[in-house]
Structures are given as structure tokens and as C-alpha cells.
Image (cartoon, rainbow, N blue to C red; front, top):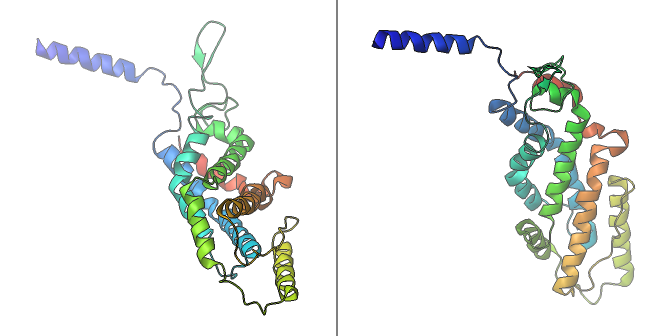
Length: 260
């Protein structure tokens, strides 16, 4: 009797195995590798953004140009980048099966699905390739959302930057320092920032004898970070040319299509 039960099980298993299988979605290694590939490619524009942010902090708070307070933002970004990007790309947009129901009720895969060019929004590599401009915009916007969270005044990363700036600010100036000296330094920093960051500039106003109250200081710091990160991001990625610096269309399409 056991022999016949085994035969029946094997017959059922073979029959099920031979049935047409639905298109597999991007999952497991596909999700992990694509997300990590984007993080690696975003490293270059991220470094550019951090450099601009450090220059703006130096200009606004009269810091040495070598001061790297933006490193706290970069460290915080590294902790949340993977989860934020994965969530933005996959469960939030590219998910589910690509099959469509015909007039007689049969589910079929549209031409090009699951690969290489699937015209249905679903969780397959072919869908990500077909809707690549959407995928690109998702990753750019995900970074903007991350930056917005990192520079919130009650965030740990903002407070770390605040501590860094306060520790790096020059000590109280000598009464002998003239107003002319301060204006000269301000113009020097303002000119440097203008050359380094295109049309975005920030005034080189120096703190008056480091006499900021905490609320004023935090507001000034937030304004610098808002301008230097969230607003500057569109320039770093080149929004005027469809985010050309944060696209990598050809290599990313090839990378995505490695997965079934």
C-alpha cells in the first residue's frame, strides 16, 4: 500500500511541476543586489554633496575648510540607506505578478514579461527596465526623503553636526580684530562657496563673538543643511537633464537583467 501511495505522490508532483509557472518576481538576491548596487553608485554624488555641505558650514560658521562635520550625516545615511531604498523600490512600487487576465479569464504574461522589457508595473526585472525613468526618480526622491529626516532638528544626526560645529568654531575673537578683517574673511568664504557650488550661495556672515543663543544657532544650522543637502541634491544629480548624474541607465539595466 505504501508503494502505491508513493507512486501517487510522485505522479502528482510531476504533474504539478509540468504546469505553466507564473512569472517570478524580483525577490531575495535580486532585491538585495539591486539595492546594494544603487547604494554603491550613489556613493559618488553623495561624496559631492557632503563636500558642498562642509563648505557651506565652514562659510556660515567660520570653520576651518578641513572641518568635516558633514561626516555625521554621511554616517547616519549609511545606517538607513539600504532599508529606505529597498522599501521605496520594491514593496512601494515594483511588486506583484505581471500576468493579465484575458477575455476568457485566463492569466497570461504580456509580451516581454517577465524579461527583458515588461510593459506592466510589477515585481520583475523586465518591469524595472521598461519603467526605468520611474525607477531612477524613485531612487533620487528616496534620497531627498532620507536627507529631510537626517537634518530634522530633533534627530541624532542633526545634534551630532551641531556639536561638531560648536566644537570647531573659533574661540572668542580678540577686541583688536577689526570689522574690516571680518568682512574680508566673509567675502573670501562667500567667493569660495560661489565658485564651488554654482548658483547656490550662502552668505558668509560670521557669528557675533560666538554669542548665538541655542535656538538661533539651531535655526541657522538647519537653514544651512536644508540648502546644502535637500535643495542642492537636485543640482548634484542634475535635475535639468533628467537626473543624468544619478541615472546610470545602461549599466543599471544590464545589472538588473542578470536576474530571472
